[in-house]
Amino acid sequence: MIRRTLCFGALLATLFSSSCIKDAPLNPEADIDSFIVAKSQLTSDPFIDQVNSKILLYLKQSAYENGVVPRIVPVPGAKVTPDPGDTLKFDQSTGLGLTAYTVTSQDGRYHKTYTVQVVNIGVWAWDFEHWVEQSPNRYMYPIEADSSSIWSSGNPGIAIALPSNQKVPGSYPLRDTTDAYHGSHAAVLETRGGTPLSSLVGIRLFAGSLFLGVFDSRFGLTNPLAATQFGQPYIGKPKSFTGYYKYTPGAVFQDKSGKPVAGATDSCSIYAVLYSGTTRLDATNIQTSDRIVAMAKLPDGGAKANYTRFNLPFVYYRPATSQMMLAIVMSSSYMGDQYQGAIGSRLTVDSLQIIHE
Amino acid sequence: MRNILTALTAIIIASSAGQVMAQEKSSSFKPFLEHRIVAGFNFGATTPMGFPNTIRSIDGYWPEFSPALGYELSLRASQKWGAAIGVKMDFKGMGTKDKVQYFHTIITVQDGSSTGTFEGTFTGRNKTIARNAYLSFPVSAVFTPNDNWRFSLGGYMAWKFSANFHGDVSDGYIRNGGPTGEKVIVDHATFDFGNEVRNFDIGFQGGAERRVGKKLSVLGNLAWGVRPIFPDSFKGLDFPLYNVFLMLGVSYKI
Image 1: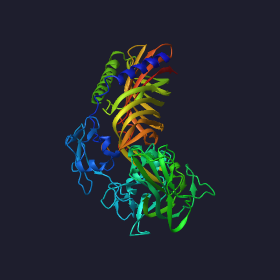
Image 2 (image 1 turned 180 degrees about the horizontal axis):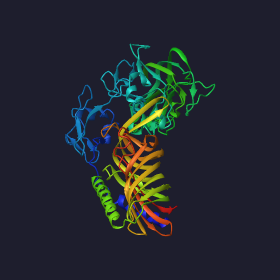
Image 3 (image 1 turned 120 degrees about the vertical axis):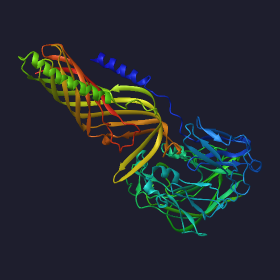
Image 4 (image 1 turned 135 degrees about the horizontal axis):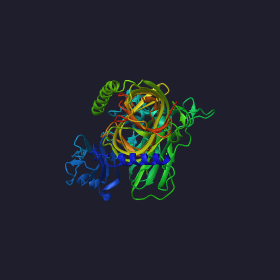
């Protein structure tokens, strides 16, 4: 009986594993995997926003004015037009690359066109007046006066887990609000519950988050803390981080498995981190990395019914280096990185500013 | 499929012709009924017909514990020809490990009253364990050339009474929406499609028996399902799967 089983199993295995496997399908993917620019021209690593087909470049002033020669690596088998080798120049007022790159998949059926955008923060002060709705996921994000985008949030991660009929701006944790301290708009961060898909990976709560940086969707499902990458290139020495906020914690604080925790109250977190290097830190190491140079942190994240001013001095731990990045991170649940908090906690922020030495 | 249908029709016609001829030659033969208990194990797979090119390699295959137990009633209409009908409890199980590339899938998740769907193309490793149990009714034409051998060919209808189709995907990524969607790394995720398996299976079956004792025979019977185990509305896999299992066992005439 056992011998018969083994013989038959071996026969089937050979049958299935040998000539039954057809030739590999042609690659239908059309991504740019890497966009490489000489490090001497960069203030921070390039970021490929695969969701929006945008390549974000952080260039030194001379590279921005003269253009750069990129090396583009698409997915295996795909072709890039125009063939990169010519200098890529930028519109000097908007930072938009004057060449867009179109990738055609190996099987010829799919295309993706990438635009290149130089990101430069001129003034480190934000009033959150201009907002754009992302297509097709319909979440809101703030933009600068020159239409560039330097703030990110957990919204792209939630978009992966939301059913398409629920993709409306109101479903997402970060939105705009007209309840402003100054001007017409402010940013509101609200902790929301998980979705059926997110509970597949153990996420039952999405804290509202707003941070300077990017969202790398590759890690959105299995390592969401690595997906939120904090910081933008910074020159100078920051003295303090100021702004206005108000906060209302949600009614029931729940733990990671969704069970209510008696007696616990949610609180918000607002902090800024100055760190060295050109590679972004993320939610796994932003408060613990040995690259941290200075930090400004809100000491008490408790409830504040009305707009309250905060003025957080930067405390220096290490000497500054030549290439640094500054991150501002805000969350409506201080334990949101462990998926604990109260659904409905609301943090509203406006008129943020970094005061330099 | 059409070849099998032609072969089946040919055999049924031949068997009826054979019956008539037999009746003319040996009119002393009286038809009689036989009862048999059939027991054995199923070896096979819930498999696609021809591998789609999205399956890049089969890294492992093993039969799960799949017993079969049934009863068969047969009518020997003439010396060599007859028909049989049976009822069988059939466990059909297997496990497999494979690598897939650009595999299109739509996953639906139920959580309380709300449903979430996720569509994308997956590249990576997969391990699947399928173990479905059916109450099966095989119907066959039977040819008995001599005292030692017995051949049967026909079809079966089966009703599922327990379904199990689960596994995990790992070491890969899924592209959200389709091939140009953003890449989302999947280092480990599980799936369970047991609720989606169809209740009714139908197919062809044929077998051979060799007598080894006065009432005991050893047998082999291949059952080839022709109906995909998942309905068309199910899009978790981008190719259909069929039950193809060989039963090896014994039959005992009672």
